Image (cartoon, rainbow over all chains, first blue to last red; front, side):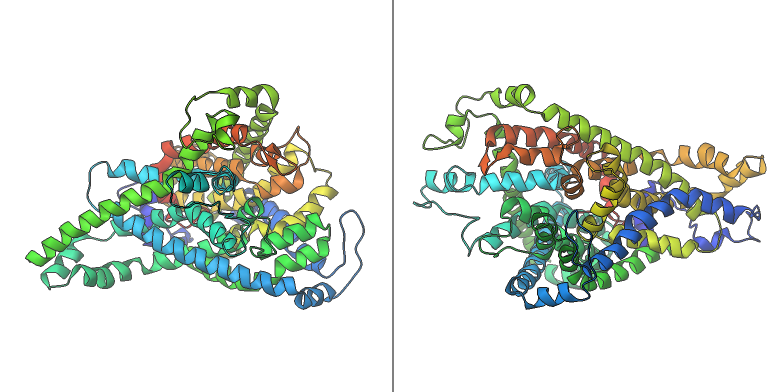
Length: 321
Length: 280
């Protein structure tokens, strides 16, 4: 998958495999002068500055902040693990942890199933398929805030599309409070996340599907494999790496995106849709407790860190191979 | 064999059915957005609310341009997205060239750092970045936002361009170097002209991400003068009262630039995504 993806990106028919190995001294390109290291760092300077000052430093500062009782606009005092201790004792924490897990797992699972369905449907032969693909991928290009606002209006109690539609078509006789009903709110938020996130899955899956040589299916068919068997013994194994990378990337982005909750429910009703990134946001900016906010945002980081490390490995291999 | 072809036909019909369902699911929200923006308030709220606008009007749009700072938001979003894109492209090209073509100690580590950096979520960084931006007195400035956007844009541009640059045949560059071209000269004269499609794609991603960004824009900017479109939209909510007509109009208009760019670049979008380099 890796080299093929690369080839596709380069937009060429053939790819010259230029890995790190080819740029060794003694290679044909023996112009490796002594100043090359200095030149390299000069060229990389802006990028390195950005990484160091805008990511690495803030990241360390977040850890340091989480150990202080800093408020907005006031100097902080060292508080040790007090923030974390307070957090773990709080009922909201348990509820938020549970919500975050449900939210992430359900949303990722649904996006996966729907994305795979979409990709399989688009992989079939039919007229105007390119046009349909363009339409189905459109949610990917819309800013998340706009998606969330639009859906908030669809879910509106009194005049939103859903209630309007259900009542006009006599499917329901009373108004449903989609976003303020404790039993429905989380489901609604997840539906919006799925709507916005599915195209990413179908795009990567479709690219993977189209890269599977047709001969494999023909061979399987000659061997008497049914359509279902072809799916599980030809399609699924070929897509396994794409499945993994897509799910890991999406899990990181789903778990840390607070815009949907912020616009749709603000964590309500009664913390039913409260998730960690949103809790960190309200703690740091609403309650102005920066230290506590940093602690909240870091609580879920160890889990993500595992994913990030695995992904980093994977993506580097993709390029180096 | 017959059973397989019957299954095929069945599958095709299931596929067509699913396609219809998926199209409805995807397009209804867009329909509702556009339909709302074309309605009068009477048709939007209350008992006379309609599913299809009976008397379509552009009143919401005229109101948007005449009575709200919408144009200002658009201008700010453009300045910030273009600024971020230009800077990220320049930084990205330089860094990517070093990583793709030069040999130096620490190359592997930096490549790893780039990916890692790119994957660290903004939800983790916005609190400490808030103190950084305050200390630098860059709250409520275009520069401040551009600076923070570089934190996701530069690693990503460098990373993607590194892949592209590596696929430019070495021989071409070698010839230029033998002819006395400097390293920078060969970057500008050999590599960049061969990577134009790649540069366009990277610019597209960078622009769209900056245009769509919300969290940093929301935290680091309060003033109307600097506000971007994504955070400006939420100002149509006044004390929990939503002005849905103009808001849907504004939503539609501000979704247009990324949408149009997506339509232009869609062939490459998918290819870029397979590298796992673009947020979804």
